[in-house]
Length: 468
Image (tube, rainbow, N blue to C red):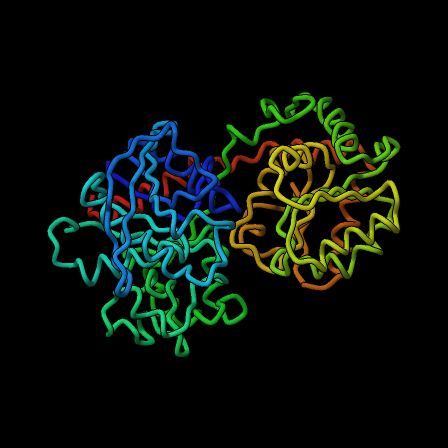
């Protein structure tokens, strides 16, 4: 079976800001079960301690413009998967994983260090890149190192987790990345005078995937293409959508260590105790046990539909519901929930920040989960919600449309507050009919979005690229 080396900016359990980390942390293990040898390369951020890692190589030198930068490589086997950390404190030991003005240098260094890992430590058959932060590996391999026998025959798979974030930088940074000058053209990496790293990943990969079939179709349209719909159309022959899977070892109400009580589809009694525990955790009165609890776990941004939430929230609260929120993001949306908590005392509570334990408690303790996204490449929380019997209300876009159906959740299509309210009220109406609601919960919990099917699709893709 092909050996697979994944490259990403984050992966659980070492670094996480969103769903990308969940995918890179769990897909390699699913591939391992199919017989693949798998490894992951990522940065060593300052919050990752290396006391139980092995120093695999010292003083790997990468070149960025006129700078020669030294990196060390650490390795560790985690649940059968080999992880490599690229250790360069000057670039990665700082506050926040992203959003720095020299991100092009940081992830350019990561990409060049990947070539050193391949040359010195772990040679794969397939290099699987994730999002713009690893995209430079593709043009490096297919241009400057195309004739190097070390890399002969290696194929590249490039996965787009969110097309909105493309790694776009001013023209001045191009020379710092040590790329051939002819790549600064519209059919490769130039984008309206800027350099676009994601375009390099798309142009020089052997296969492109997105994280759901619906999103693979959406990004070829002007509405969802983020300016790259035409470019992706020219590479459509190598584009396909493979739905992300869920890690049911972590997200399973029958075994979840974060819950006050366990339950499954055949014995739902524990979910009532989880609802009571959630209210206590948020400091909300227990008389909310008689109300439907709406849950949200999300980054607070327009992409996640928070402008829609802002328009509908006050009217929604008048339907005598309780609201429990975990997330952080734009200040205006955090202020929205502070205002709601003041206007509806005892019925609204929000935790601002990332809290994995609390996220699990919301998934288990809420009755209804809200995901009114403007667009959603895949989404994992709706998949977790289904497994926990917490009925999702979602906008029919991307992976939300692929994973939620009329028998398990409630969907709306137009991006208007009225549409969102209608779908939420349909859920609330059924919630007040216990027999129908319980049947829906059990149908939702029956749905299987484990990695087994998706990993098989990736395995078939890898072997197809290699002619096996």
